[in-house]
Image (cartoon, rainbow, N blue to C red; front, side):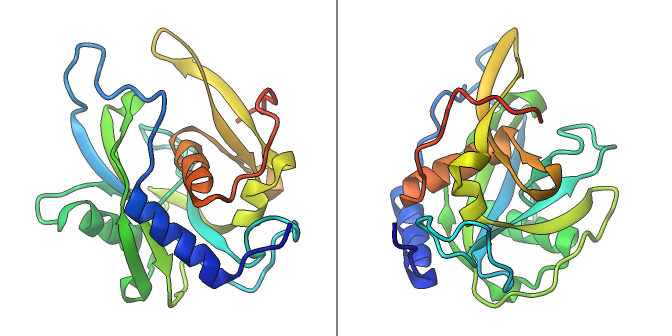
Length: 226
């Protein structure tokens, strides 16, 4: 398998933004039929974030390709301690989901938004556990800038995740967790240091990897612990 170039990877993401992504198995409304109460947006930011390569070098993405993630503070009411995309609620003064995703990312990580090329927005994803409707904003980091956890009440760590590690089948699995009145299986990714990406963030990553043509067959019966 020949790794694709960084330019190829960006072109793949431009196509994903243009064609869109379908979120299978996600309920569009609450149990009572009404839409979620909150609107939010997250920044799904890919790029060559540093010179540190991934472990895999035979996967269909360049070894230096990364996506920006952070770890939420354990004291937050929703999704405490989980790995997430930067982002948050859409305020009235925001220029829609794109403006909200960029503003929240700047507030959380100190990122310079002038170096970010927004490729487009993806279909909204309902998140019933937080009564939220989230718009993923797909973007490319054309001019990287330093990032750090700015407000430790929101995030305790900001880091880059090698995409080649995310598509490595030995690092993929599912998390079985409570969902409404039953149990659900959602994608999961194991990163270095015992970090597990699961839930909403893993769902978005998995579908974007699929849509970009980067996924490699993996064992969907493999259960990992969050």
